[in-house]
Image: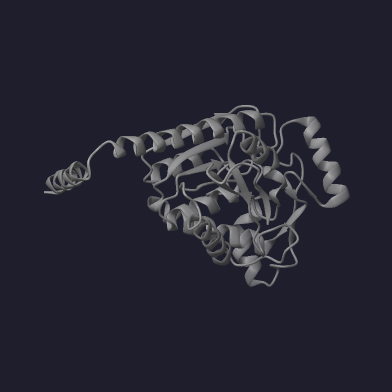
Length: 295
């Protein structure tokens, strides 16, 4: 596990999930800026999900992520926030649909459907390829533009891929098994988005080549969050944590988190000045109002 923890334990904790067949490298810039702004950040890794691993089962990824966050919740005084990029955002939403008391979710390049302009036509045949026994043998290789619009950064990424097979945008390839399991995770999360109630910030590039911006519309139409905010970027591709507008992504993420934690803090202060008797009365009144609406 790769962890950033340099601020007091009383400060809010953010758990960030990287994309499929990748590593926490793609979150390093965001994590460092969050840490400098007073947050604690953890970027866990899971077997069968990281680059270089044999593809695991999507349900195992999700269960590991849920257990990881659940264990942290038992130790934390403040509610935990989640976030992720690409399929990591999908994974964060999956965790948010299963666990209560998630404070906020940062959805960066959310991938509920792989429908961007650079997705190969043959991806729809992933299930057939698995049936034919090609799951571990077929490898989809990352290629230009590598999810990056900035030409200089793209050149750096290309060199890193050639030398090390991994870079800040992920690994140099993923197997058909990875692709199939990703599709399964997306299907599950889409069916359970209504159970997501945490405050949600969605940041997405209008030119995202992996996940069309209509992923944002699907997300916002389906979740049950009272607070949901969307920001669209005009000068990036899919890897917005690395590309031209990474500073904007970090700034907007921090602003959103601080705003929501301030709301939580102010809410606690207001509750403290109300007597327990009055709090009970208000809860009963609210219940009566909700029942009247139903009848």
